[in-house]
Length: 350
Image (tube, rainbow, N blue to C red; front, side):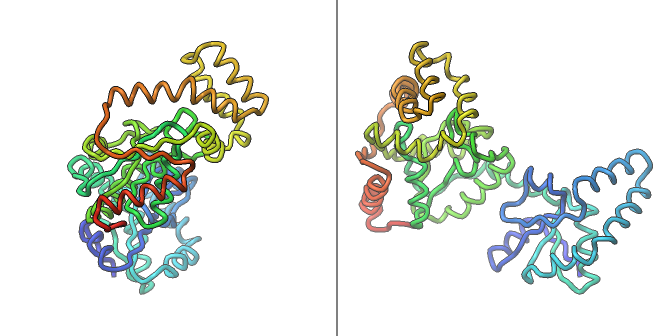
């Protein structure tokens, strides 16, 4: 039996029991954006979808339906088997809750396999994400990690998250490290994917006593932070991390692995090269080309990133918080954990 449910009804079911989302759109649509955690079992691949779309426009709807039926018939046994092997509670969706999800749900119903179908499809989910992000208030108290480039802010947050602390990892959701070199070696997410990941994370942490995230600029790679995060950052308690230069250089080398992406980093450097004093910029480039990456990183920190960070901090002004002096990420994590215990009366992770 096909059971059409609204997004609100399906999300309520998801909270009550295990529910698997199945995206039956084409692989390229799925890669572009989907409901987080969903599986892609496409009823048509990209070439098939393009062929049917062309028939629809050039010949007519009946010809497109007939060709669609022909394609589905050939792959029906494996298509049904893939979905049948998924747990008992599942919901299918396509772009707008139209033919693809309806066909899927009907075929499964004929085989005695119960599925829910999302009314309005992914388009309805995207509308809900946009509307909710515009109105949501991040409820928990916020602690925001600050510090010069290389102090390991992201590494600190990820360690805390691994230990069960309530963390919003904005860079992970953006697929970008937040610097001019941040896209290298990263897949990079678009705004739709970032928004969905962020909203789901915010909702999962709304009952937490507090939340931690990094003091990012409004733009991270290709995505823009919503007002819900930028406003929360302004009222958050800052945690400032200081670390010696050698440790910062070592952390950057560990995170960015310049020896593995030498040419992309050289191309990225061209974007900031004009902003650096010419002899220093030439020396940085020479170090990069001759694989003296530690020297290049230190010069970049001293002559580009640190001055920019100092200016930004001055503009922002010093707000009450805590300043942590650490020799490495592990020390910083332990200091932050101790500070959080103090601030929350022993309630460490929730």
